[in-house]
Image (cartoon, rainbow, N blue to C red):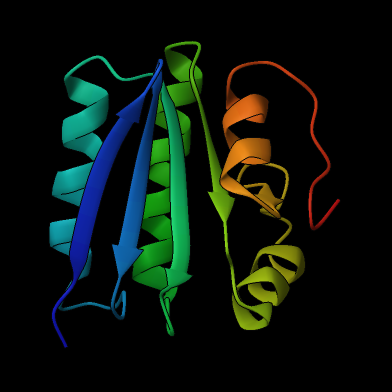
Length: 122
């Protein structure tokens, strides 16, 4: 299955809609897309993962790499639309603090911009 990453810039937030399975075959593409945004100076990313039916440990590694890069540059990343399996994975691995999940793109955008919002997991 192929992976699609569509990016929309709203104010200072890059909203990325990810569609497809994130696994060993597609992780390099996701990494290139997301870290490319960070390298281009974007500091606030919202990842809409509602179109991601599966995300393995390599995909989780990419998300953490993006989180670390952004954190080191006073930025932030948030997820929206995560399926229950991904929420469970983030909770079990205790990564939900680094990769918070929000109910809406608006809540996630507000959170990465420094405004409090209600997380799905907390």
